[in-house]
Image: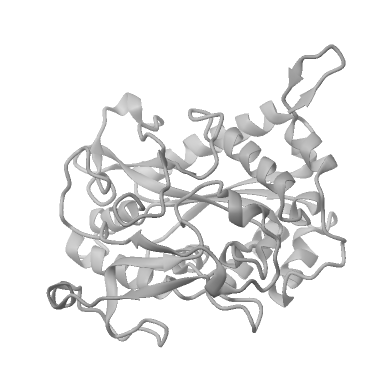
Length: 367
């Protein structure tokens, strides 16, 4: 926000924020994989189709989250819809950008209700976006794009968990909770490294529970229990799969070990897992350098420290995955509507009923 000449507080547009934000030099490297993708994504002579294809090609190989990798190739029944915003559109003003996002968001929810779309990406693409430095300018821009998307929750608060609602029409219409995150190139080699992405800023929305239920609805798996097993395996393969793009950068998420014999015995039986998943891994919680469900995390967004001392960073050790389950939960439970949908009437198809909650780094409240 800026104070005008007559003393009135004015809200800066995304375009204005980008103009005055601190940026890296054009020759800054974000790793060979992102640099290669950016050669297409930041080339004004390339068509939208070429840029879109370059982004999906990168995601299919270099995205740590395997849901994103599979979705970029439309494998295992995962389909991702995308809203693409370039800098020419940003120059048309916040109202234009938000209207485009809301229109595409509604179209995605219609396809999600039919079980043919699951994830949703909003790409803010362009050189000014792709070269933003970690810092308070980037943090403010993350808040701005979140406000243009989650209009029902604006103004967005930092360090808060927001969830999207994703509809699915089976025998009746219901909605599932979906996590929302922001990715950007300059996360490279910082403690937010696993949120690096080429081309600009990306808002990513993902609901494993919606995907699991859609697999059953489409007859791609015999039961929800089978679908939940698939989700658990993909999740375990995604945790600890970071550090991509630089040899010295470790994953900024990792597996917890399970010491409770009863919990070990109750784990889902899975096929052979990669080397970074320990034999005694937990299927209840994992750890990371940030809360992976927070939309706009302050500390990791403003901290541009390259190759940080992982041991000295804050560790979030109780990030739950016990919601990946066929067990139904009460309406007030933290895991409600993650794998069993919340029933809604048809007129609530586009409505997002989920309240935000603040992330707390503690075993009881962190999720």
